[in-house]
Image (tube, rainbow, N blue to C red):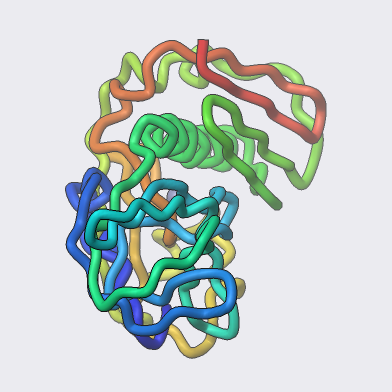
Length: 226
Ligand SMILES: [Zn+2]
């Protein structure tokens, strides 16, 4: 968590759908803005940083990426315009595609663990594409892996205190990788399929993922939008 910037998309699944937000500018760094709150995801956890605009008065500043640096969320800007407040606008078209792929990744990783006991070591999603690195090889996947959108499962997000985390409910997740300073953990739950601690953004229902392709390449699984 950042010390200053509240990341609204961590609160609930509905907040992952915020496209525009009035913000206060806390400080201006050499390459970007620190804001009081944000709807933009910062790069990390297998999901790219968001892009968009910060409108300051009658000026538009392009936000080219969002990163975490020295525990601060920095909205990297193409140019810097002075100001105390602004309106943050997300490149929603890009972000929504990333949300679909991220949700699909959770479901695939969960099915792999449930059906084959295979853990995901690493995953990365992009706009319309994603990949998962597994601890061991697999070549044949059941039909369910190709029907995650058709299953139309609801997705929820909620926070729980770290000490109340039941590790047995979060088997496939690497909880050791969570920052030690974290007191609350954001859980993303896909009804009947998965529960995982995650700071990324996701869709409300797996039906939103739409048509996708999926292929196994041994220890690597690739998937993408049709
Ligand atoms: Zn996630």
